[in-house]
Image (cartoon, rainbow, N blue to C red; front, side):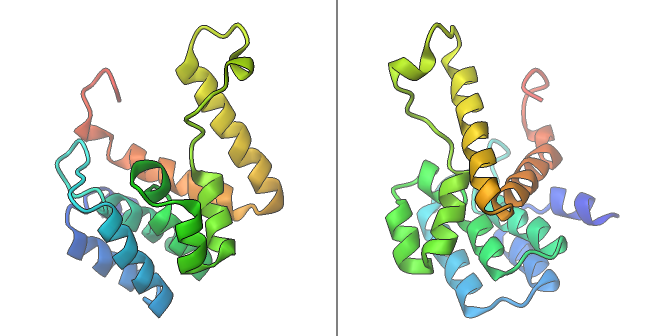
Amino acid sequence: MSFFEKVGVVDSVDSAINKLQSLTPLTPKIQQAIQCASEYHQGQLRKSGIPYIVHPICVACIVAFYGGDETMICAALLHDAVEDTHCTIEDVGQGFGWEIAHLVDALTKIVEIREEEIGNASNEKLVASALSFRKILLASIKDIRAFVIKICDRLHNMLTLDALPHHKQ
């Protein structure tokens, strides 16, 4: 079984953490990010019924597999906390430093669209997606690590598509 097949079938927090630990040392900062992300995502489940926190840990595994540094791994662990929980960029900055906060911010989708940004677009979801993509591209000019983490996030989502109905895949 390839690395990606193994990451795609991780279905528990313990197995996700063990996989991450097999790829990189769990420094105190990475352990803190795992704990923090676990607390923020407490009670959330993915469509598959697996605890949501497994996803950010698996994204961190992919980042580590490709040689990502501690900052990238922490940002991967926290990448959904700001848009899916009560966590703020300020919380991330205060707890983990502003370098990690800037990466997490770059990975956070633009969900609020002002009317003047929509123009005559008929599909707000498409506009939001385009603006979010533009945001990450602009952030990547300053720090390419944001783009690498985003690709790892998308890769893990693709590895777990079987949990979605066929028409969503």
